[in-house]
Amino acid sequence: MPKMKTNRGAAKRFKVTGTGKIVYSKSNAGHILTKKTSKRKRRLRKSGLIDKTNTAMVKRLIPYA
Image 1 (cartoon, helix red, strand yellow):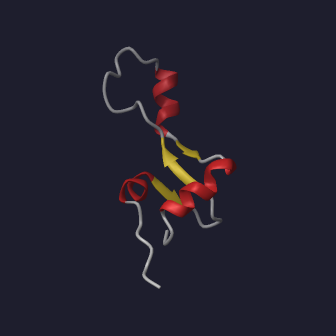
Image 2 (cartoon, rainbow, N blue to C red; image 1 turned 90 degrees about the vertical axis):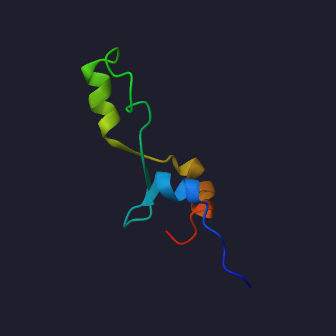
């Protein structure tokens, strides 16, 4: 059976933690930052965890992560 291909877009966006959870970096922090509040920008700096309902789908996209 051939190897599974990793979805390269997903590989750049998601990382798997040691416990198997999936972490992503939040969007909307790239540009047009002047109109965003300091509180909002501070929260965008932190990474987020994928909800458990989407975990199986993302793990299928990055099978060797």
